[in-house]
Length: 610
Ligand code: ZN
Image 1 (cartoon, rainbow, N blue to C red):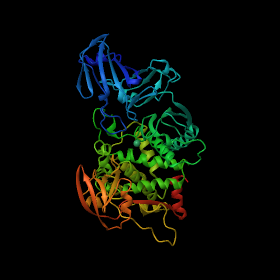
Image 2: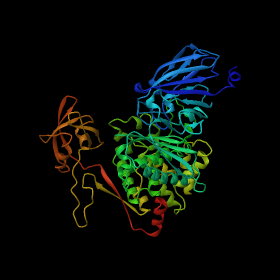
Image 3: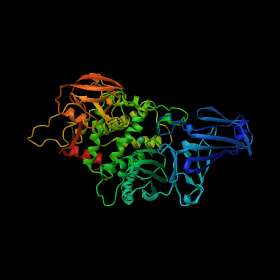
């Protein structure tokens, strides 16, 4: 009986009101005209696509009630994120309030200065209505002080001009893929390949907005042309960069036609600053990363994400590709679009290589395993993460670099990773088919015209280090290492190499008293060999008092192999230990350009675009 009854009005209607900005409360009303007569269920997602951790947004729902045909009906919670109404034949309206005080790209946040929400935080899914169209009413908060608030979102507006009022989405999945910002923000826009791109800055700032738009435009056009070299056709009809500007903060989350970003005020460009500062580079790289996701993960998607199960973990081995290769391309697009120089790009790559190769975790976990366990390991790192896991972002980016150079080598520079991306775009992303496990590897082999099984066995499913020295040499780039603690410039010709100071083999932080607290203890390092652990506080070395500021300096005075006496505390228990200071594990990776034969130079030019 249900299908006959429910085949008529399938639209779900949402109204969201910033009800009490000072108390950080949104009120949401959700109406289903043709509820399940056995008892309609409603659920709020346990996670938000793009951020692979169970967050249980339902913990922020603080009151809920239901009515049917105007009369109150019973609604009961049946698990951590699901509610069920008593059987009702008429339309059901669920009314609930959501506490919004999470200023993150994944959350919802509301105060007197602005409102922001992701649909996954505030919009419940009416069970059985996931593919039904949605009508959304976004209400302006009541009161004079909100009279000038504007709205910024990629959600489709019913009116010609976007403002508070009516919006629509073709399905629940689309509804929750368009975050919404409201307030008195800075709004600018630019065209990239004929598509309007909006730039919204919320929070106090003194940014050179035209400069930001000009740089973003170059990056966006380069990416559109990467995927569609012939037509330069973007896959969305408009795009929104929603920047939240704060004192300290960094992060982004991708969506099909927008991205929510949190950046530090100091990362924004200021007027008359001609160069791209390292801080601004970081911001551009983040924006480039999220924009690349418009194709890679929002449209070219793991088959295991189609559809997402929003109530529980969704496992895939492929984040090394969807996140790692996006990480590879974010900086590559900066150099190719001319926003940064080749030397600046090599600095970024060298930093990434140095970071991965100095962490023992890379020998314990493959990037495929890291992808699978993102939910419980990458997103929930503890003090031992450096020894036990590898980042599918950072190592994944290096796999992208190695694969790109391998394909260029195999094909005499006729093909590259760009061809792999385009092939996956055409065969999967454009046509809405999920990418099965193993398909990325098959596509890469096909493009390379060679069986790359061994490459992927080592690079993705194994823990063997990538042969970046050889691969980078094919593009005329030399990879070398310098001790981390030595001066930042290499010794001049004819001068002796600088003295390499010893290392404790631990990351030193500060506790609330300013004492030296070990935050990480590296596998096989001096501290671990002597029995020190993360959390221990070191108070004296060789009979002298030390603190967070002086410990490293004191250690530098010794030689590699010196045995020193340390006094440390574990909780309130004092320990006296002898530590043999060791060779530093961390080294700085340096990439340098060589004068090379024309063939290698041509390869480098087509790779970096300059
Ligand atoms: Zn990403």
